[in-house]
Length: 358
Image (cartoon, rainbow, N blue to C red; front, side, top):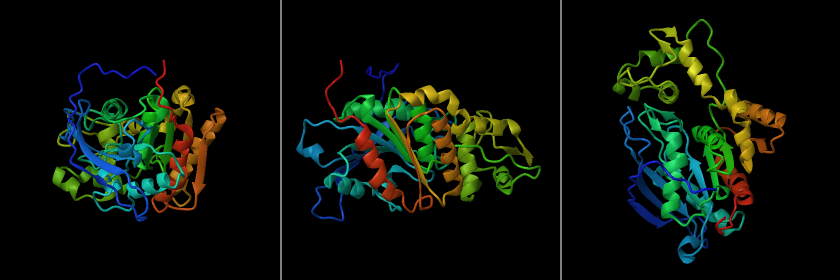
């Protein structure tokens, strides 16, 4: 793969805010190291939400990174879900799962080959970026696929080629991994989705406007938004990503309902951003991926149904992929899936050959 170059100078600042050995439950396991840094993004500058273009990024470096200073590693970019951030998954804040001890165990036991794992903080004013390009929240697709990858390759001992880059994510992050992966097969070779949200359109509302739409329509100030329920906030995040409007402060969005009336044009924009609605246009890109996998719990009903459809479409195109519905809900077995499925998937499909291609 040709080296990725950007049409401007990246003003990336590297501040190691915290770097320490990761603790594992098994005291005999040699532990990796986590760094939490800040990267300045040109792609996120000037977003109308006012979110900081200096983004935290958490990075897991495997145990041998310090002891073997000549070794280079593949990188898996792991995208977190809605309302989450990088700090939660890397143990800086309390969360329902923590990645580093899990990675320590898998790599120490030889269940998967060592790799670097990187997670950017995509928490925004609306509690999540949807990893989409938008004037309201910034160009998150481009930040991940271009700036972040270029920065990590420039500052860490990576194997800087697409064959050695994986992209994954949970929930909103799974949506982002598919969205970014299908558009950038020259950057990433292997993609794995964990319970990906938002792949297909929700059923068209009946004549009665849904209550959650009406609640969103009633929110007029930032303070009211901050007090809103989860579903209302998720509608705002979706609008910020998929129906931005630079003429509508303070949120700079168009919601699917306005003054109590449904807005079909907004719903059409949302539909256009659902991957199952435009998958046919990305089939040639998906064919370029070396490996593609996805899973969901059987009690994660709508998401399980959507990945069954994704499986069916890929089968129609004779595209080889891994797909599984397991016993579980949206979060209760995700750590286990990462440990026993996702990491092995990347270990088996990424290139660990650091020899530069001609």
